[in-house]
Image: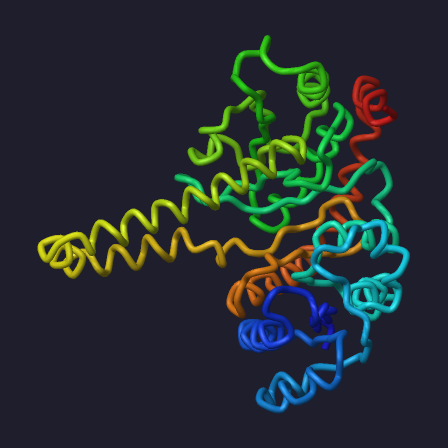
Amino acid sequence: MSDRVTIALDAMGGDNAPNMVIRGASIARQRHPNVEFLMFGREAQLLPLLERWKKLKAVTTVVHTDDVVAGNEKPSIALRSGRQSSMRLAINAVHEGKADGVVSAGNTGALMAMAKFVLKTLPGVDRPAIAAFFPTLRGETLMLDLGANVMCDARNLVDFAVMGNAFVRSVLGLTHPTVGLLNVGSEEIKGHEALHEARLVLKEANLPGEFVGFVEGDDIAKGTADVVVTDGFTGNIALKTAEGTAMLINEYMRRTFKSSLLAGFGYLLARSAMRKLRKRLDPRRYNGAIFLGLNGITVKSHGGTDALGFANAIGVAIDMKKHGIIEKTRADFAALMQRPPIFRQAAAG
């Protein structure tokens, strides 16, 4: 069938691999009947687990390798010594056209280093970025970079804006997305030089939708912009802060409802609403960080996620293939290079 999608899985990556990977793949298969899998890992562990999931086994090919990238391994070492690892072979499958995308819950730095080395970046892209969705009052906001590039110049920020704009138009179907640069204030005089240079370029770049200028930290949760652009240092701190705040709220609520019999009775009355709230804030719903800017679909699952979270990460990769995000991002960069000189100068560094 022409709509078949093949996803390569690093079956040994993650805190609870390979059991979590296989169970997650089974959930994803139920949601996406057109998906097939290439699983890379140790046959002795994978094959007995697959026997429990007959329907998954029917659409899965296992490729054996003993090598696994450790969670604490330095990216440079993994790049040199992990050529036969489950992570590297899964990435190679995308490069060789055997798979439409790769999903791994393994070492983030190693995955980025290997994917960039094997798949390369798209024409016009200097550095790839890690992007993910945040829940907001208006729905969802895409934020990038979340840790791939600790220090960024104006060109990198402009690249991230272009990639994020293309992604939300393709995957979320937004025809008029808003894009903002994360800053310490919305006033034009605030922020460092790279932010000011990027703002000037994006004002002239005429991206589809609207560039709203600078946004602040509280604008992320408000949903002020559909795409929030920042450097990886700031973005990663914002991500971890949001995750920690969600866990804090959940724990406060749990303790509050256990504090007295009356509070417990109140929980019984509000149980339906509380379930909706927990579901809305469930980090597994937003699992699956996207490596944008690479010439191939690469999705990073949280290392400590469970099967449901991993299934959502697989779903992100399938959506990227379905909506042709690589082709659309490539086309956007090609079109923007024809824009006024201010953009071409920034893109050239």
